[in-house]
Length: 350
Ligand SMILES: [Fe+2]
Image (cartoon, rainbow, N blue to C red; front, side, top):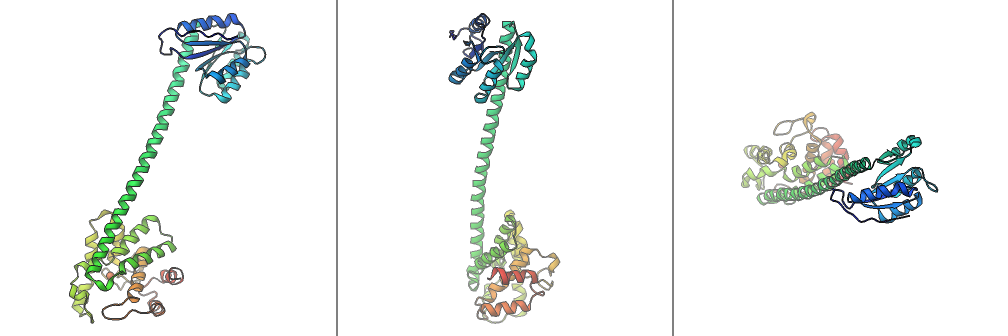
């Protein structure tokens, strides 16, 4: 039997929908009347089957469920309700001899239990506590969900910003590398080609993303120091005098100074400064040998030489690919790292 009762009262749970389930109408009615007086919207059911149907159809916030009932007892009704509604407060009512069962229902998803005969004020108090607890859990969950959504949103926006920043950085580096070519037209396309080939090389030796970025910037800017070299020397068609050659040899150090104040070029500095070092330590400006050269430097030393040899220069014509490879192999272990040279010949140039 069902009976709807009008809401009254002004407690903070006013209007909260409660279903009271008991097969004894005499036990049900006083609870419904009391709760209605306190402002709840109270309905009742007299067996477990009706209770489950009611909860499915009307989604009350609270179900007060007697354990001992014919047809479907309160424990079975609790299990069925919890299968589709984990959110409502369920309070079990137990007779003296089924307190143990009532205790077990807590593990099945009941929020609380009360012994019969029910003390009405106590029931209302327990209901309010359970409702408060549910509210807190829900608010906490909402907060967590919001927080996760906010963090995800912020992360996405940071990633977008980072991507934009990287793009802008690369554009600046490309512009700087084109400035070198404006001063030294014979090297037109050289920095771009060295960068492309170095990146292909970097993939073959499985560099990290950060190393690839440093390699990319370093390869594009390796000759940036030529900006500080006299144009007459850079573009001299004939052989350089010793003084002129010493002057050209300053470009890695000048380049290093140029990039040293740009934070995001920190990883690229080593390439700019050391691209004229040799594997045997006979290069310049620091005479670094193999033990102090990074893979990034070793890569650019090889790629820079290859591209220079296969390009026209004021003082000589471009060499063919085969001839260049043969000549470079003659400097295997002296100018070039032999392991990297093998990878370059067999994997990068293939
Ligand atoms: Fe150079």
